[in-house]
Length: 252
Image: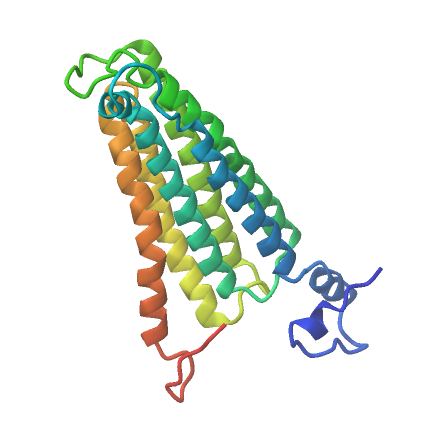
C-alpha cells in the first residue's frame, strides 16, 4: 500500500522524471501523529506507575515518623517524575520542528520508550535498597555496596534514556525531509547539543553513584529539573527569532 505522505505534509507531487530512489526514500516518511500518540501513552503510563511504589505508613508509630522512614521512596519518585516529565516536554518540543518521521527515527523513539517504561522498576529498586541502612534522616551513615549498586542502576537507566533522546534529536536535525525547514534543522541541532551535555552530566553522576549514592541521586534530580525547564526556555527563544526574511516568526 502506498502512503500519500507528500500530500499530507504539503509537499509538491513527484514528477515522472524524479529518480526512483528519491521516490522510495520519500515514501518511507510517515506522519508524526502515530509517533506522538504512542509516545504520549507510554509516558502517561510510566509516570502513573511511579506512584504505586509510595506506601502509606501503617502500624503503631506516628504518621510523621512513618513518613520520615519512607523518604527514599519520595526522593526516587520526584527524580523519576521530573525526568519523565522533562523527556516528555523535550519530546513534544522536538515534534514541533518535524514534518515527518522516517523509520530510523521511529526505531530510536521505540528504544527511548523502552528505557522510559523501565524507570518504574529501577525507581522501585532504588527506593527499596538505596540507603537501606539509613531509614531515618537523623542517622545517615556510610553507604553499603547494595545502596551503591541501586544508585548506579537507577542512574544507568536515566543515562540511557537521555542518550536516546539525544540520538533522536541529532538524527532529526541531520536527516533530509524530516525537519520542517532549514531553521528547524538548526534548532534541532542546537537542542541536540544541549541534550548531549545533559546526558554527559547524567553519566558522570552515575559514576559518582558508585561512591556517593545520596549525592548522585540529588544530582539526578537536578538534571531532571533541567530537563523540565530547558525546553520552555528554548521555546521562548524560538518564538523571538524571525523565521523568514520578512521578520515574521515561524510556527510549526
